[in-house]
Image (cartoon, rainbow, N blue to C red; front, side, top):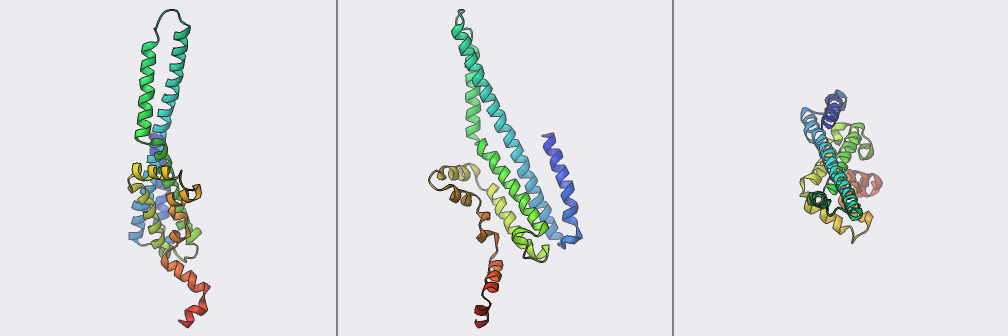
Length: 218
């Protein structure tokens, strides 16, 4: 927890001067959005990811270790001639393993930490694309012009965490067995598609550039 807090504090300290930079040409409201909706949400997702990952691997470690102890106790009890001396420890480790497995599946930790990791990394990547005016922001002349598209992307990514996870993502995972992997990933990450990364205004401008004669006749 301490290392995660230090990492978040360091990243916040590094990004704050960039957000406040006059070179971006953003208004105070836009800078406030960058701090509260992008930076803080990215740090929150990163913190949730690390916490869920530690919980998942901690439970898996206890489960595997408990299974090994159960096998060891059963083996020693079989070769021993002193009776069922290992029954009580075997029962204890069996209950411990069962509890860990139930907790892991109840909170769906294996999918949870991967979900938080994906959202955190996508928020981070989207922010750097916006700050550098690269990717689908390269057609904009200033950060102020690209800000509306960036805000839409951030809100779409934040929505991935707002939705009820245990119903949506688990349902997506079950549905993945009935559709192709490519279609499943598109459904899970809709922002990868060109239609959603480009706003209607941008698409209209691109269409106008591609068909200038058609625009003039109209």
